[in-house]
Image 1 (cartoon, rainbow, N blue to C red):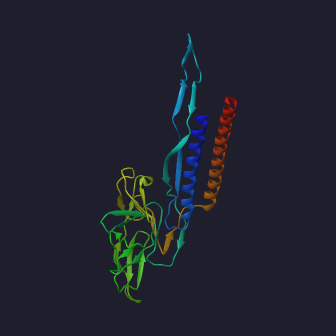
Image 2 (image 1 turned 180 degrees about the horizontal axis):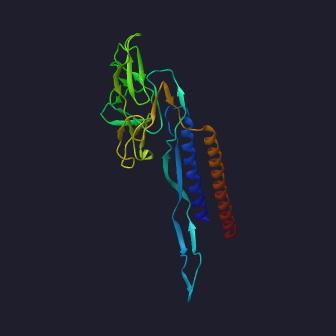
Image 3 (image 1 turned 135 degrees about the vertical axis):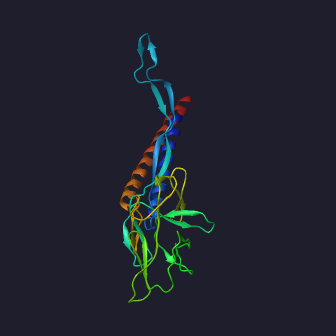
Length: 262
């Protein structure tokens, strides 16, 4: 009965972590470029009383054995990089990635981070930066006399300096891809950092080498589906209640034993 208490308690703990994960997903339903988090579960260690196939007599063996589980635990969390909805913004510096790939930005300490959030603006030096002021890398500078900026699906940037002028080629926007995007480490602020699991970033032109295309004037919304999260929340709640019921039953059985001893 003590085993049942601890086993059911482990089930309540993992369901609580599931609820925490779902709550974070729902909280970021309107976060640009957010990717939902998913938990995976696994069994905890087993106590083996008798091994399957253990001999019971001459030329005989037990067909199944005897094992007791000790509950469940979190095996890991995974970011789902499924494409989110692309929404128009009207800002000429906003860019949505349709397909795999990441933008790279440079922090103030010189480190690099990767993001799917294409909400860019011009700063005081006419460089394209994130809302936190991190510059796009490789850097992109828009001339102050540019009237219109045209960003192609392949990352090419052309500008118009007058209403009657011809487009002038400026530079190209690079994208980066990873062999295992799920191995990236979330750093908050819509930023990710590379890890040994994600592999080294590989620079590419948008639309080539396994990267997606750019869509000017759009941003990628969160890939969280509220209905799916609510269903998962209900299931987690019910599973939590069932585990708590197992604890209550075990407690009642212990109480009956104590009453017999008295």
